[in-house]
Length: 296
Image (cartoon, rainbow, N blue to C red; front, side, top):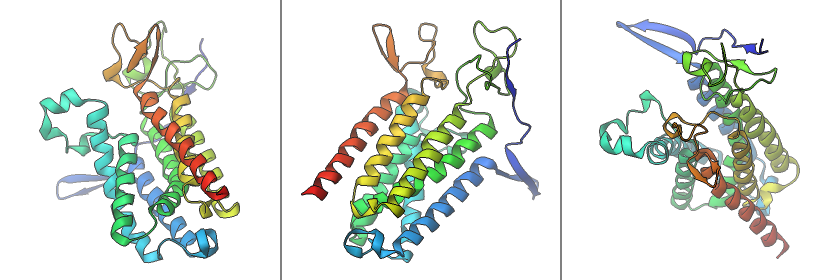
């Protein structure tokens, strides 16, 4: 009999309030977004109150400007995440059904698209406020893993974005026929808890490293350093986890059971890996550039 861990009995909804004939629910995923944004906001505010952390002993923005930046970031996450999902994962479907592009309540968000949206928001905000955009980016990259950690844990609680089948002892029996049915597996299928792998790698470990470098090792005084490390660190973590993460259903076919978005000569890459490679290249390039500027 295959060893596996039963899925914990945690409801995706924290509580539900009936109001005017409708039910309003607070879900763990929404709470993860809210708490992650609040913690990130307070950490950035705390950092700009310490001028010694920044180049020339001067913070790039005032605490009240951080609140304005928060609005821009939220818009970048929502718009970029949705449009990224539409363009990267199901362009054909949404081209045929354009009215559903804005139906974010039906699900479908892309981290890579949200990241692009945040980058554009930071650049536009910084130009509007006439502040150094690269230092602003460093501040955001330093605290973003907090939200990633909480978001991936919420993905696990929701029983979504699970991994491929595994016979390892920590495989989890996720709920639902789609999760519990695997080829060549008799009975319930155990899967990699890939959400928790991502929570550990791109959330906890990456977050601790970036905060330590920013607050203790003076990395914020080298604009671009933390931005480069975040892009490279997230890209490497996501690329590795994709090997055990169940690919998006739209890429899985009879001749492509592993869900490769790009394949050649019997090898391939998932869409998550394809999108992570530019992040890794950009991140390492940005990090090396920041170090070279310092030496110069």
